[in-house]
Image (cartoon, rainbow, N blue to C red; front, side):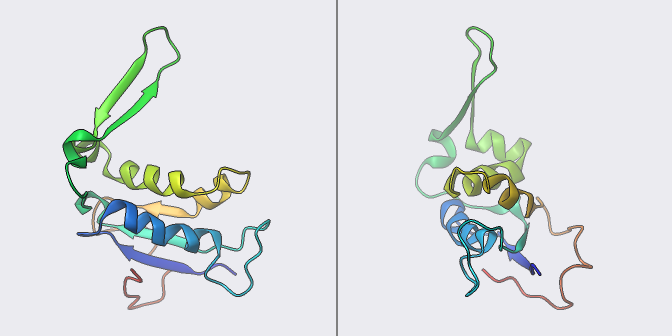
Length: 133
């Protein structure tokens, strides 16, 4: 049975936090780990809007995508993306560190990210659960 873990992202560096979350989602921290089976746990991340970046990444790093139309290349800086959708910055970092295989979408469903202190999974976490990271 999968467990639920609470992670407080306040003042954490995005890439280092994502590198600690991915093994929990995939189940590599368990002795019963199996690479072709989803044996990972659920991760609830709070305070996603208060993450940190090292160096000049806040202004220099750009997220790019294509709309599918001619000339449809779009980009947005990390600072603007943190203002619009703070949980998506952390989600993209975690998904970028996962293996690109069929289990990736199953692992991604177990990741719950909230921009503030409040989250919807109080009933699933044991009472008095501290942040694991």
